[in-house]
Image: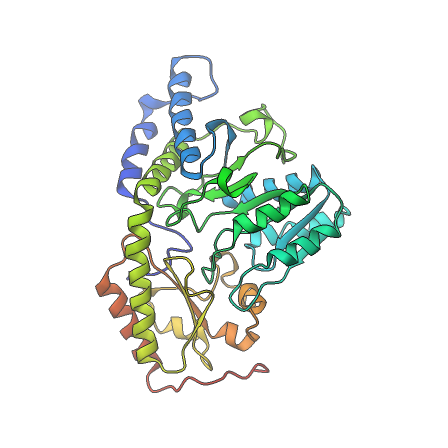
Length: 380
């Protein structure tokens, strides 16, 4: 199989596995919150991992709150952040874990604004300024760093500056961006940031929310008071260590990965464009290095993938896989429902090769056969 779904999940890096294995053995047993040598050793390993996570995003170790993944981190930031403040502003292209919080906030009486995006998926800072002017203070703004379907990178520094003028807290879902882009929370003016292990060649089941003052979300659960009372529960030492190792690797490799993966993405787009006249690209051309989202007008992308079991690609976010609904991201960019259903998301990563890119393009072309790509009928 040619794996081109790195936006859904990245393979565990061998160096990350090597870092985790010692903490999965029986002689490494020890609750990191226990007051004895076994617990202290585990706690030390977790604190080292916390420092690696913080270093990746320009934060302090004490600002890192480990979670079960980015979905929990986003929920803690948005639900907890709005409960601690007033209103909420998010973009229309946020991940489902952000947008899924909005009905509950509305039910509780909190004002919520969803910002539109332009045809490439960008949020207009002027639109954010207008939205915040109509909300009670303080408020929470949450805009993702890079989109998980079309790869568009948001102007976070400009958006955070607007939020600061209104006294709002600024959070960003940075899950997709951190593998190939440098994000410094202090320099950008971010108060909260979510990340995920399995999008950084780390383990599944672990993520983090970075919480910088004055941000203090209301905890989602009660318990033993771990992690400054923000997220209760015993921390999983092997997973925390794995996330720390993944963040360390990302910090040392992201520039190299961005160059190589970006070149492969451009090569893939060039071959598809040459071989499939009528194909269209979605999102900003200067977006995320490993993301290529294309529309094949008149084609049902889900049916096409059934003929390509040897290619691991997607029709949209894995979180909506099987839902049957068109991508909310593509609809927000202005695509018709038919064109959204005719779109593919190809995610390249650290292990992708030139040969795989070329073969993937050839296999897609062959699967389409003699079909002529044209304008899909929005009414179909």
